[in-house]
Length: 229
Image 1 (cartoon, helix red, strand yellow):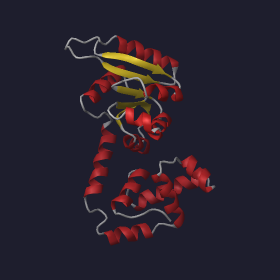
Image 2 (tube, helix red, strand yellow):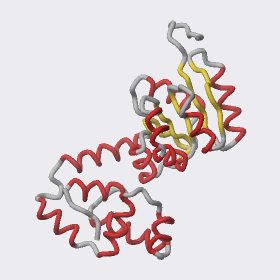
Image 3 (spheres, one colour):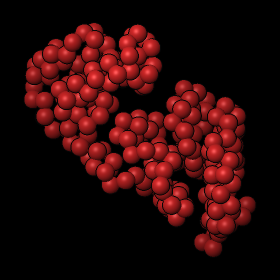
Image 4 (cartoon, helix red, strand yellow):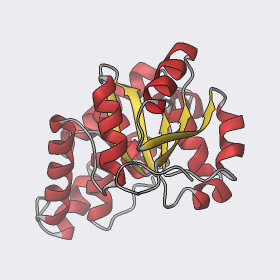
């Protein structure tokens, strides 16, 4: 196996990107670094999932939340990636998307305007046990943890009252949010418009003073309460 100047084996990167130009640029960029090696490249989610079950890698670099969800649903693949650092790139600075990605195991979250230096830095940083995201999203995590640890809702009775204040439809919606469903999927499941779903969820977020719908679910769960109708 090749080694870099430090005598350590290079970081093994598997790249999954839908855009051909992006794949080619990233592969060329990584191959110029002695401490990085590309062990796999793919554009097809299904094909990549099959390869990831058998190809050893240190860092999985991907640009699709759908693929990330699919990996989480495949027990064998998820188990093989337990020690792999996952970096999601090419995404928006969206709190809901970010929190869902964190729940699915990512330790790096790079926006669409990330530079090549940031991409390389993210791969190296996650291998050193660090997390990579924007300061704004980092602050969101601080707020989420703070809200979970501090008695923001007061007693369980108070939390129960807040949940009871939700309508049956809102509890239905939050139960589906807790399952990881998107607004489009929820709308189809409940035969509602996406606009109606979005409005209901925003009202629940406001009710619990949550920064995202997933944070609202976490607040409810922290109270030890069920969100099933």
